[in-house]
Length: 317
Image (cartoon, helix red, strand yellow):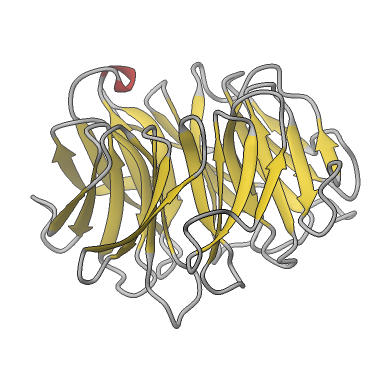
C-alpha cells in the first residue's frame, strides 16, 4: 500500500523529491482545479516510521503548476504560477518568495533547474508558446526560445549534455535546443498527432527521450534516428500527463494519466505496464522518482492526494 498525504483544499499539479535529502519532497498545488484561487507549496518529509508529514506550507496568490529544486542550495525551490510569474522560495524563511521572475504573459506550466554541476540555469515553459532561460542566482533573463506554435507544456534539461534541453507542446512536436542558439531548435520531431504534455531524458543514454501525449500514448525516441519511435507503450485510456525515466534502471520509466492511474514500464521488456497503481479518484498530474532510494516514486493528483510508493523491482529489469 502507498503512503498517503492529503493536501486538503488544494489539487496537486507538480511534485519533486529533493536532490539533497532522500526523505524530503515538494508539491505544487492549486485551489479549484487551477481555475481560480490561490496556490500552495508543500514541503513534506517522510518520517522514520514511513509516514509523510508537512514541514511547511507557502502560499501564492495564483495557482502553482510545477516545482523544481535548486541543484546548488538544498533550501531553494522554484515554482511556476498561473499568473505567468516564477517564484524562488527559501525553505528557511518560507512566508514569501525571495525572488519573483516576471516575463511570461500566460501560465507557467513547467520549471526545471539544470542538472550539470558546472552551470546553474533555470528553464520555464509557458502557455505563451515560449521557453525562457534564467540565471536563478541573479534573476536575470538570459534568453527566450520561440518556435512552438502552441502551448509549451514541459521543458526539461538534458542530464548529461551541457546547455541542452528539450520542450514539448500542444503543436505535437518534441524539440531539442541548445542554449547558445535560441533562434531555432537543433532537432524537431513530430512526435504525436495530438498535444504532447510531457517529456523526459533517459538518465543513461543522452540520445534517448520519451514523450507522453493526450492520445494516451507513450513514445520513446532515439535522437539519432527520428523517423519513427524507438518504442511505444500502450495501456493508458486517457491523456498521459507526465512521464519520467528512472534514475536507477536505464529502461525503466513511470507515467501518470487522466485515467487516474500511475504505471511503471520497462520498454526493453514489454509494451505493457509492469505495475498499474490505481489509488487516485481524479486526474493524476505530478510524478517523480527518488534518486536516493531505488524504485521509490511519488505522485499527486486533483483528488488532493499525494501517494508515495516503494515497488519491488522484477527480476527482468
